[in-house]
Amino acid sequence: MSFVALAVHVLLLMLVCWMGAETLASDDRLARQVFGKLSVLFGMYALMCSIIDVSNLVRGHAPLISLPASGIMSCGAVLYAIRYIGGYGRTSQMSMTYEELELNGCYATLCEALRAWYRIQHDHTRETAAKTLKDVYGYEFHLNGGGCSWRLPETDHEWAVNGMRALGLPADKFEENALVLARLLDGQAKDYEMVSGLTVDNMNPVYGSDIERFGVVEQFHNAFRRITTNWDSVLNRKVMDSNLERLLPMAAHAVRIEREGGKPDLQPMLDLCKKRTANNES
Image (cartoon, rainbow, N blue to C red; front, top):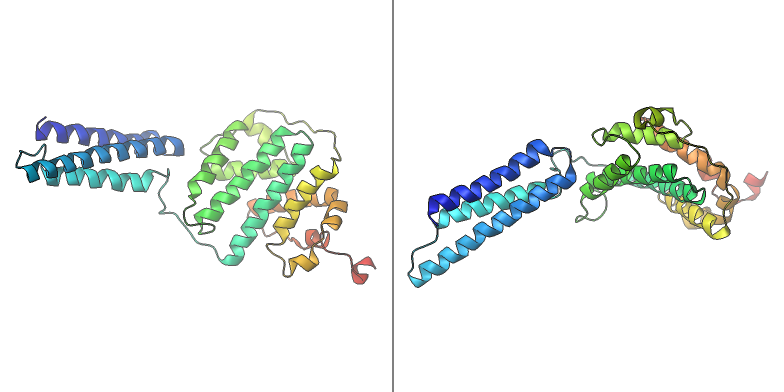
């Protein structure tokens, strides 16, 4: 194969990857990931050509293609893949303070508590909505520097988008969908029904077994220990369980207020989670 034929062949393939990722799949993380992986393969192909060229030069044979050309192709493919293998660039990455990250984790875990509760109620729509909102918070958490450095925020983004699609919401309205789902959990299903075209039924409440309720209580415990000093001596699971039916609507309301840009007061919920003392008994 001549140098011109091989160079044109590889460059055209990489151009297809770039055009596909930039124009056909600008908002589709999975498709961009596929294009990124294809770019990696083409980069490996160019790298293999470089290795063959080195081998041929060492042996005194004619190179397959020139070393500069294969090196440039390899570097171009790798750089493109590094940028888009995760599905989105990090140029919009922001940062949160430690307190903001902990508060974000608190809201995410409150969503997990709601998810566990709606699982007990066999309410699949609201269970999926709570799971999706948790993934939205997880995306924001990792996007802003929280968690392990190897954890890509695009993973949470993909999970959230998949949840939105499963609920009949358009995948290209990420923030709007999160607000619609928060309002759904807070008892305002009108927006969700208008956007999705689906009707949401209200299930008859189920008390749940001790084990099932413990799973919900544990999520409330995990949420509030992130924002409570000396949480091991303050929070009480038995108190949470006795107040569980009061905590759940308060959690949903707090998440909705936060998604609308407000700052909900979490203190009333915290008061329902603390150990009873002589002061609060009276």
